[in-house]
Amino acid sequence: MVFAGHTTEDMSRQGQETDVSLIIPCYNEARRLPGTLTTVLAYFAQRDYRWELLIADDGSSDATPEIAGEAAAHTGVRHLRLPHRGKAAAVRAGVEAARGQIIIFTDADLSTPIEYVAQARRRLLSDSDLVIGSREGEGARRVDEPFYRHFMGRLFNYLVQGLLVRGMRDTQCGFKGFRCEVARDLFGRSRLYRNMGEVHGPLVTGFDVELLFLARKFGYRLHQLPVTWHHVEGSKVRPGLDSLLMLRDILHVRINDLRGLYDAQPERDFSRDPRTGAPAEDAEIKV
Image (cartoon, rainbow, N blue to C red; front, side, top):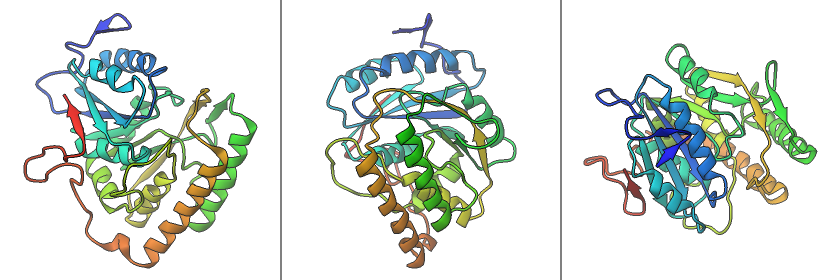
């Protein structure tokens, strides 16, 4: 397979530990996934560190599995074919399958440009435990965002800051990066959308808020990275229903904390066998 003039044969540097794992959760993204892969792999082809790309396929019913499977035939790309349980479950599976010292996830439409990986990596290698893209504050910019989405996002953020995490002006940007051990700790402690059955249709939720609440609770160093974010047509966000789901998520996080559920030891390797590293039975990982 050729992406933007590059073959993927030697794109991830051999003989080194994996530096960066990039997770792209996908649900029925056949239309834009080829272009996204071209952009991402052309970017990584110019890096001087070892990387991997994990396509976390959330039970897609279109041609996404075929596109991801074809890409996974080449070095550095892995296809996680998962049951359809929503974005939270897909990202969780990607985190536990990742081999990198740094783990980043981003949306399949690349609404946050791939070039921000460099800034996130620098921060995570120096003074931060996690980095979140922010579309608010000095240096940030939103491009072509519909008014209703901006209004919905700001209203949700006021609720988040009032009930859970003050000082975070944008918790829902789809670009987030972690040190590996931090990602595993936070996802291991999280309770939202864990061990759930298959769902119908897209499931875009507030699982990010739980991760950021936990990061604050356990004292991790968090950096809010201003980004230029581009609205891309075809979003899976459903303004009415998803707003209600995310409000429910906020309340569940607060209740879980009051019940002390986050104080237990984190559950580790929840998508892989902790003894062998083999994937769980319900996930097919193609390397």
